[in-house]
Length: 153
Length: 142
Image (tube, rainbow over all chains, first blue to last red; front, side, top):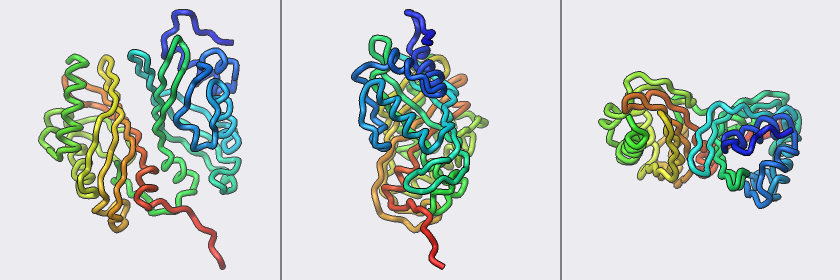
């Protein structure tokens, strides 16, 4: 059930999509709050090329095949104009193949920032910067030099 | 301080500090004691100076360029492009001589014109891939 009101802010829309749509796997939320021509600039890496609400369904399905309990905790948000940006912690347990490697059973928890553009009360575009390195290290799938704690961008 | 002043301070720290390598600007714009949430970074203006020194040691022609800004109340969020040529040691490895360019996001909280808290998500995986430093565990033949 979508609970946003006609006067919902962009932040309300985005929180519904993350907390109900993604975390509760409720696709009716995507159908209601994602524009039909929504473009996700981050899903090519998951071999997901759909647009519109289907993109969200496909992304969570693709991630869910590797991490069935994948979820996002939104830690903070900011809204200005047609943009809502959020910082989230994505977590999950590695129970399906990732990058061709069999499941490790390990848990990961990493920070990400997602940037969403809204149009007429719906999400129209998405970008993200993710701590993918942190995820691979936590899953034991990174075989390169271990980043010493003081090294960072 | 106004959000406009916080944005201006952010731009100065990125342009003069991170790209320009001017460490003095850190004392002006970063509090001596801050809360640092990003893995691998030390807090406070001294921590920011160390980060700038390290980046310039690791990469010639290091640049951090702000591409988008959103600010509200005491917060400034920026999307940046970081780039450079890897001429120094990263993660204990010999310099690769390769160029990288990745997105880095910084989230800043201000108090009285200075940064007091920082969250950040840099695309470190992208950097390692571009520098050819990313490795995966290989099966071991016994």
